[in-house]
Amino acid sequence: MLWANMLGAQVCNTTVNAGADAIVCAPGATVSLSGTVTGTYLTSAWTPNTGVANPASLNTNATVNATTTYQLSVRSLSPTNLIVNGDFAVFDTVSFNSDYIYGTGGGVGLLSNEGQYALAINSGTTHNQFADCNDHGPGNNYMMVVNASGTASAVWCQTVTVEANTEYQFGAWATSVVSQNPAKLQFSANGTLLGNIFNASPTTCNWTQFTAIWNSATATSVEICVRNVNFTPAGNDFALDDITLQKICVATDELTVTVANLDASWTTPADLCSSDIATDLNTLLTPTATTGGAWTIDGIAATTLDPAALSPGLHTIRYTVTQGPCTEESFQSVNISTAPNAGTAEPPMNFCTSTAANVLLGSCSPEQMRVSLGRNICDSFHRRRFQCRHRRLQRRRPVARCVYFFVYRCGARRLYRRHYCRHHKHQCISHRRRRRRCRHRLYNEYHYPRRA
Image (cartoon, rainbow, N blue to C red; front, side):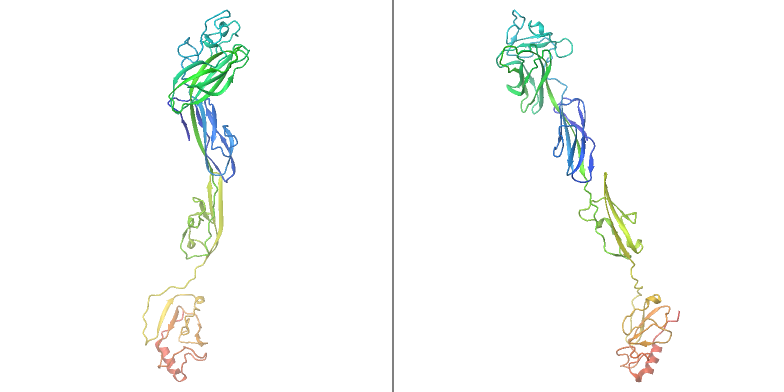
């Protein structure tokens, strides 16, 4: 994001770019902050400055422990000078005020007396001991040449309309015209001294700028002055030019450094059966995991875990989450077991208490026939023959279907009261005297499947 917040209505010809957003993979990483500025600027600053090596430099490094948005602020000057005729391009003595008077002349020139000033193109023309200095700006314009007094005084003042709650910079260029006792100057705003004292160079005709920053607060006008604070009258002769009052513009731009700190943890499901329902893989993520990642099962992209679609055995499930240059992944193995086959249920059947009946539970292979349903049940039967052994009827030969018989009545009242088989040598014995009748009723009441 690139934008500029200009104070007031004036336009500053400065733009700033903080650089592109960045992503680091873990807290404590170091990133490079590289800002660029188009145009001339006063200062730059990165905020917040915690962990920033040099907040005042456009190009610096920062240690980032959490996702942080850095703002680069650049202060620059409006090109508009609010001072009227501050460069003295026009010979004008009414646009400003001064505690000094215009030169009255004397034996050594126009500025023979202390506490006087003159507007001149060459300072040497105002006093025969002043150096021949030209004005600061290009061309042969006027400048203000001063023979200062030894008392605190306002050399130059002008009242200017300003905006409330706005920051401004005062500026002026000065040079000594006599090397002895160089000038000491200071700005004031509405009578209050600003900034530090400026000490002019003892080298004559060496133009140097001095400045001061002022915030208008609630003021809507200001009397700006250049004051003499050198109280030694000998020497203290100087020239002023290009006095300015400019609004300070602030251009800003931001970049965000994101700490990815990815978490790809997920919970492995228990062993699954091939008959289990499908599961949304994202439901396996832990509460702290980073969402939005990608799942694979055996290297194939997936969003659900469907046991029915996988072969029995171990399968590798992998979760990968990526943000910028950072990647985190976690993989685990899941076992799929074959579902047991309990056969196919037949429709409900009704039984009569006086008649033996059979129930078809379902078709199965001979290996699946040895299912014991109780003491009075056979796994399967050879055609028209039983063989009883140790209280349980055993399969002699496999048949086409598994038929299980539940006997409700056979023979006399006491017949089959407890078990089908009592002794392995007999097919159906409860009472020896009823054996023949029992065998007869068995063959008449049961219907055996034909051999496959």
